[in-house]
Image: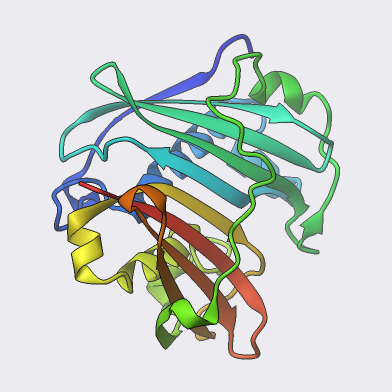
Length: 250
């Protein structure tokens, strides 16, 4: 691929929140959709991958947002990949609104056997379909998420995964974890700040009917910003996902 794949889309009203801009979880959704659209335009569309019993699974996100788009804004989302091994790939994104870059993202994906649910090697010819030499928008490092401090816990809740929260594989949709994390942020933070950086680590899948535990930790950081850390685990305490968000005052 000589240049990044570009997906043009408009912001839907149902993807905005009470701030009248794209919600944090739906920012993740737009990036996911861009990645899927890219795959569909290659020689390895989702249908072919299913026939091969193979698929790409996202493991990490680092999303940096300068401004959240509003209803009917026209977005240009560019995405491209770089391979570090034959088991994983790093995919990058830029989001432009009226010619101005409003968000950038890096993500890490594993190529898996859909039946055995473990990583497998992908064919090197995929490199031509997904990769280009465009520089990364930023260095995501090792996609590290900070550790939480028990003294900073502000909430804990238990919930049961609903059928509407699952995807075509029967697993909880990736954006739901972000939604659960954002839901427990105090109102004064949610309405008075914007989530300027979102980090996500997916560890284990869960399904409809599973009970999960969501804890939220919050601390003040330098520059008047706030950081929330949300570990999500199953009823046995096994880690499912961990999310860290830096909130910047409006």
